[in-house]
Image (cartoon, helix red, strand yellow):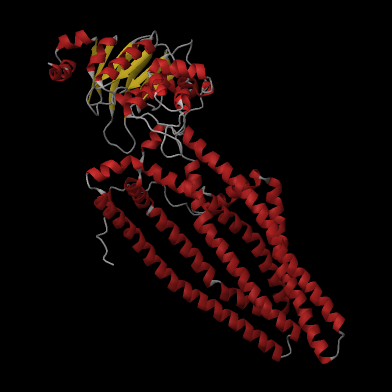
Length: 616
């Protein structure tokens, strides 16, 4: 198959992953955190699992010890020196131990599954809660999504089952190895030492291979995310019409294949190298086992081992090799999954910065005057600031229009005003109090924001409106009143099940809305909030002129005596506002009423003239 040219990392715009490999010495810390987590999730079942595994780990040595007497008595019965009852007694003990060893697995499996379910639930909760408390600026980092992607993989149910099983294998396998070593060492210490030394190459090779696989997968995280994005472009309904209109399918598929083979070739090259190394390590292990058996045979011929001991020794050697392989597999899982993948999971859970846990709240029922005191803001991983030295006060109850060209910083300023972002420099003050010293939940409880990229929830129309004040979302009267205020009542009247209509086509029985209808739903969600600070960021982008005029009218009604901020490229609404703030290149260049700014003949007047000429 012909390979396409592999794109370089620089050409694809990948950022280097900022989290470093887990430092040396982090393995015990990760294991300890995981063990604490298992014990804290379900202490009773966790302790029971440990006891059961330790008991099961001791059984192979007991089987070997009993096998010695089975073989010894079998020889005696064969020679007529012992009665058959003696052999049958030892055979019964051996069968009982073997049955106990095998019967313990269903019990372990049942307990493991329940613990896995509880741990998966606990981790998913921690994963989502962490996303809910991280400051919004973190989501602007490209490498954050690589970390998040790896954390989600580590929190998947299948991963947890493998880690739990590997975690439980180690105590049992170590108990097996120690017990067998005690048995074999009593019979032949040199044979025990030779067997263990010969078995070491394979475990060491597997651990090294596991680390190499993990770091290769880490380096490929960005490529895999991009490949998933390309697959979504090729298969999703939202993108289908444009992909077909511009005939992009072939080009996108080509990029997808380039990324696929870039990843696949690296994996194949690594796998080939590891297969050769694994074959060599396995050969050394086989030689060690063969040497051990030969040494045991030499001991039998020399009279240093009894016949029963020789037969049991062969069984013990195989069991020791099996225990070593089990430990090898578990250690490979630890290095590749637990110590490294779980370490990445803990990297995500330890991410900073988080939103402050301040407990203060704005004084009075509203927000008071909102002041931006020499505020600047720079997005993560960007050299140039998005806002520079903004100094302005929004008076309580004032309606303010925020205007400027694309990229001027309007939406960024709104996010600073509402506390979604924290200033890189300067302060945002609510009634004279620094927003950083206030409880962000109490502040947001007094805000209603409608963004241009508002969420279209795949729930009912009632839920989509009611989520503006989630605790009252079941109050149909409040939902209907908000819908009437924002214009979604006309949307409800056109839907088959009215407010109970499911607004998505991804699930059976649902329907979708037009852009203008979704805009009305979003504005109605803002009415549902009924907050003293109202922010509308490009609320009319998807509306026709008539609907736009209606939204402006509703905005005036929604604002009432509230502090209101309206962001838009269309300047006709500025007449409804008490003051207009004009941004350019991240700076506040003008402010005043509509008439004052038109008369000044500066930036706002130029924008007004450009828009007005289309209506002459």
